Image (spheres, rainbow, N blue to C red):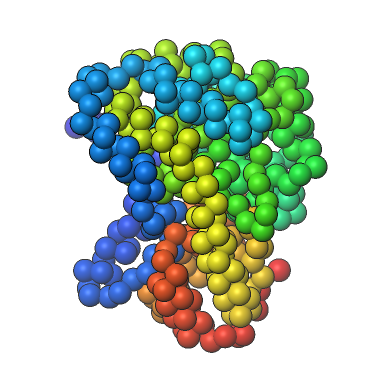
Length: 398
Ligand SMILES: Cc1ncc(COP(=O)(O)O)c(C=O)c1O
């Protein structure tokens, strides 16, 4: 009997976090207290004002019918005014803003809107897995560019072979970056170089802006769309998930180039019938009334980042101290690869970290530690890791 699923599903790797969740569940079933530093899912509550806004909105019958796929005007206006005040980016709320059911949905479905079979979508390795799964499920081809400490975690666009470049239609980039924590510093020409390159090669840029509001040490992450010319070549997927502790709410926005937003809208009218309008109203409250909330969260993540960096240094590793995102990306000790070191931490310390290799082959030799765990549990995890490895005994791999 032929398999009862589409052949394209066989192209997908098992979703990394599904495997992690299984490992955690198995230990917990055995009565073991496992601390997960694996998944980037904020542990703190959504702002009270947003929860209250949802409560009010749920009681309003005008939110109860099919929403428009364009989104409520007040949601689009809130996104546009946030972008203007925060990033100095002017968006037309009528044509350049579209709600997405989280950045993940946006990234996945933008592939359906932009790619045909045989097209190439460029992404980074390591990178968010949907930059690969999205193209594959469109029968397009992902082509991943390595990012590493040597290239300052910026893909080398000049390294793309001519035959790949000819078939390339879109490029995914993401700063602050998951999993590496890399950022675009002031004066960095990377975004401007991407705009020039995209114009030259007629490529649509999708900047995944899931982490811009979580940043440390006074750093503020820019929007790709603030780069001169960026609005001509690309869009940004903005998400409220991480900075307003709203991962469960599934709310974000696709913003930028009018033609791309319009193509995406056309696709989405055939898929999801929009976002519950009560959620749009609550999200608008987050963007207008809770502008300082991400700064409060950033202060907490910065404290946790410092705890983790200090602990990793104590066990002999040399992690970079990230200026943004909610992750620490660290090289594993000599004698280990990503999987063996992650397994060691799970076996010996009952602590889950993400093996770098699960974000792509170029992530081999690294682990990713998520900071979305309460301080006391994070301290406990650090204590267990230090106890099981012996402080100062492991030497970093070169
Ligand atoms: C780089 C990156 N992009 C997008 C997302 C998706 O976030 P959401 O769908 O919750 O907006 C995530 C979530 O972890 C992410 O790490």
